[in-house]
Length: 275
Image 1 (cartoon, rainbow, N blue to C red):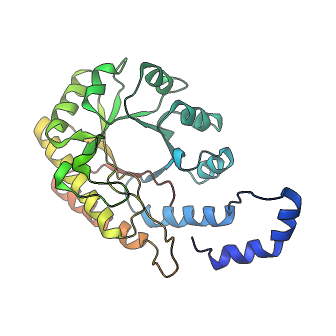
Image 2 (image 1 turned 180 degrees about the horizontal axis):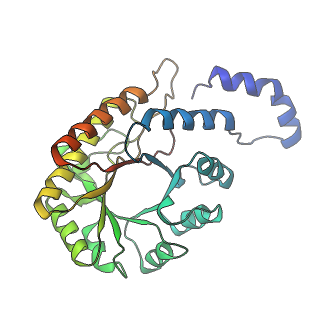
């Protein structure tokens, strides 16, 4: 992937010194660049109600990187017990953590509920009866099937084993409510390393349509929607970066129109990793 001129200017003058001290090979992370990207992200999406980035720990489970994410005010998306432990070791608790796993075991549910708990994000309707005790806040990962396409990296949603199917989603929330859930979230994950911001806007529109439908069907309000990850970075020279300002602006317009129609608006979450 191309090195930014800013990083090159910071790195090259001290590179020989680093090599002499550490030897090779090594990984080096640009903290200044990471923090600036995070701040730009916050500025772009702060126009959206309750915006929060949940850093995908699986993308880089490095405690120092996680500390930087926490300094920026980000939460953590975890998919394993190890990722829960790493996030909690730097002080993350409760709704600062979202646990999105698949084929979740009793041990994983127990770990998710420990140390102040977290937001539980279930990716299969069959997991509902396996939750030891339904938490007050629950989220489901939505799979639209043939209603949307993916890309060459992540594949076709209609062929994916992950997520609650469109025809199951109302029943999933109805069942969770009957078991004690009172706050609800909706999540999806359809794409990977996408540089076309319009796809992300379309995904936000899709989630809001599902929220509107489910809310009217069973009379619940949603606390948040989570766009998932998949925001891309330019790996090749000449590739244009993702236009997050346009993305945030158009998603903000979608939320404003939703509020006018429905009288409430959900908080907006993203779970970027590589970005």
